[in-house]
Image (cartoon, rainbow, N blue to C red; front, side, top):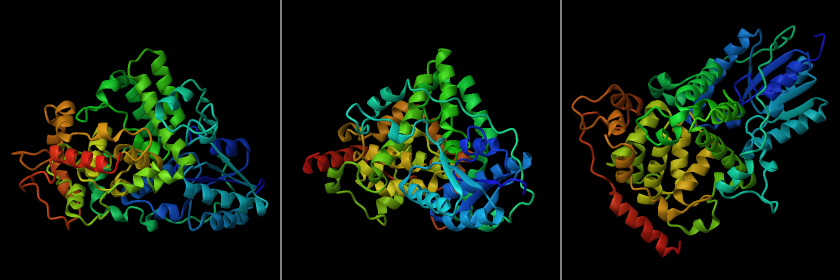
Length: 472
């Protein structure tokens, strides 16, 4: 090769627009070799996020081919894969965008050190977040533990404009050998559910940008009110694309700022939701125990049930709790790979408060079932609703799933959309749940709908008694 190539290590950032590593590589004028590595962190993903990541990799590979480039696929420890590939192609540098969960940080630190020792430039770039977590501090120099002051601290900060996609990605004289994505079997664990969920996926960078544009054009005005109504199409649905990096938070932020300047009423609420994700990463960076342990350490004494084999846990996972709003949310997740945010809170509260089951059970289940799974957001969301996390007021967050349904689904449109039992002519989406679930679950659309395993009233009283007995 006339010039030593640059390797761009692609991870959960499957786009070309606003991708600093690709921008820097293209600016060098050297041949660019994009590579995606199936490592232990990819193999450790739950069924739905791993399947969705595989779809994203396939789509991004086609996008690169349209630009005269290609995505090289390799499997193994990134340290070994990148050292071998850099030696094979004579690469001068390896670039990537940063990740912030502790396992990725440990991996990336090791890779960077090994490459530098081998005489290969290794550089990481921002782009997964609006603000690097270590740059946001309280006046006392610590990190924020409550969302509202965090929002006030960052809402007027300058966010650089999104980078345009590189106009050209020079190809090497000869491409290195690549694995075949089909051989990886990233979607195997989805089994028959893949065919059910696939129509709800909006795949790739172009689809993500179209989603953002459509939301800003017709939905952001009413977003503040409509985002809490699960039967309405009132949200951006961009969490799916954001989770695998098909769109950047900066692109969303600047679109929201333009809407705010245009006087669209829901724009600030949309911006606050983007910053809520930032807050989750801020907490994960500064207190990584949020992924594995109670963020509020005093909650270690709380008497949660931790046995996943319990009948009530099984009923919750199978969306047969007898509480229709809860079951509708869980079925929406099984059919679409996503769950409306308002309903996530109800579903989570029912498990951790009414059933007094550990938040880790719910977090793990979501990690397996959500195509928009995000490590920081999932952990913080579960700990927030359980009461063990930041900015939590457990007494006020024992959500009553019955009154919540009356408030946010008064005509039962959402419940009817997802629960077939008891309906004379259930819709296709309600029936599709039975096509998605494991065949080992003995459930049919014609079954009688169950009585509540724990009523809204009894569950609330049990939760409050548990708090009182433990001095919460």
